[in-house]
Image (cartoon, rainbow, N blue to C red; front, side):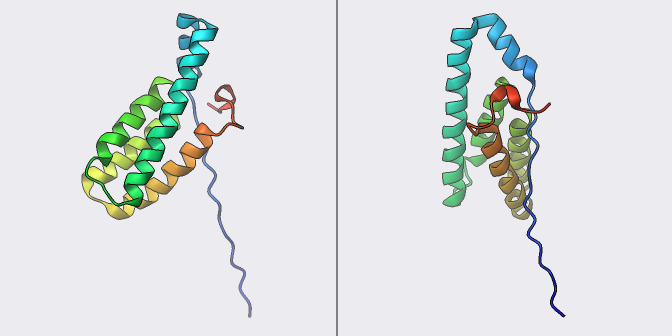
Length: 127
């Protein structure tokens, strides 16, 4: 008898605190806020790329600090899911749990891809 093998593709729901972005726009005006948010998203992408490079080279010494920075940047612009999963990855490192870190790292990559993708506008992210 032939068995069916199903490939599961996890799809992360990305949550955002819309008020964080609204506050930036209220306080700075549309033009300046747009520049700030665009710059912050670029910094997040660069930070995630740097972290991915550290993970690929298995250089974990500075990784917890880099994940904490990523979490702060994400939180500043209301990317709740990204900030939360970055914190979870850091906790796995602090506990020395490599198996859990691997699983959470895979989730962090998925959340970062969805959070930073150009086809998902920052205001379109579900709460």
